[in-house]
Length: 470
Image 1 (cartoon, helix red, strand yellow):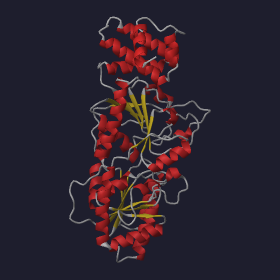
Image 2: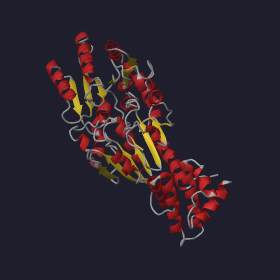
Image 3: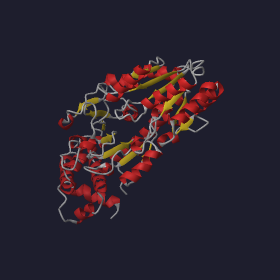
Image 4: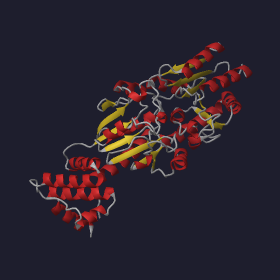
């Protein structure tokens, strides 16, 4: 039977019901689940366009009842939600979930920038486990998401966890606390899981997981493969999704690098800058940077006499790693090492504007691929401001920095010291690499990200409201 023939039969049958075991029932049942929903929506739209308003509620009820019997109540609700949007009864809804949104970070910025790109077209809800305010997002990332709705989902199982909510604590012997998120997801047209929490089962008709890196192998409550689309942020991440999760992700969208300078300084200051979260496990390697800077100053005091090291980044309260780092710096007595914690986006822009060299060592001394930088948004931000990046040679950093052209990649602290010393002593090299870095950073800029995000969700929404069933 052709698509048109099936739609006509459906349109007629929906005025009463689809008899179980009938030819039409068997034909519908032979289609994949999403195909069944597409045909039902098309038939209902045909009825609505023909002006059969009196029978339309009965037809919608019949379609939902059939779908409920075949695919469950969540899919019946999906059909009703689709119908509301398809008939122009309301704007489409979108929810973004992130269990780490209360901590400053590049992955969090990725998801929020998606919302900023989509806020004109959707009614948006932000789902978190810790309270969030639009003012924090404005201060941290320079975005206005005050029109979004914010909903905090309490997790008693993590009441003692402070800011750190680790899904790895949940085993097969425990109930899945993240089912609370799953149940809410079905009430939206589009659900985005931005936090790589593979324990959230998506119930929305359109479901997208943004994977910044597959941190855990499939285990208890693994649902990453249940999402319609998995977006990945780098080729490094895609490689490890295939290795760890055993499927190929769908869409590659590089993160949004959005820290262009408001003005170009005539001359940079002698500052080495690092911007990274102060992870409790120390994976961003700020302590090692302090050691390298002290060694650089001790071995080459005349060459480095004017240079400073500034370590900036976000941190939760009561962070043992950060406290140890502060104590280590105090013990050195070196006043040229500065910490800038949880600063605003404007303060960060000022640092990028003035600094000359950028260090990033995530991945150094690591054997776990999850602890190697998956992309490195702050590297791109530094390059946008003409800083010369000297970064660890691994992970997504290899996709950003071209050695000897836009910066340098290193495997050891000694290599870090050697390349940095060369940059300190060669102003022409700093300028040429800085110019090349600035030019190369354009492939990661925010306008490109906004365009790719809008195109992706526009296409998904188009099919959602008008499926091409042929």
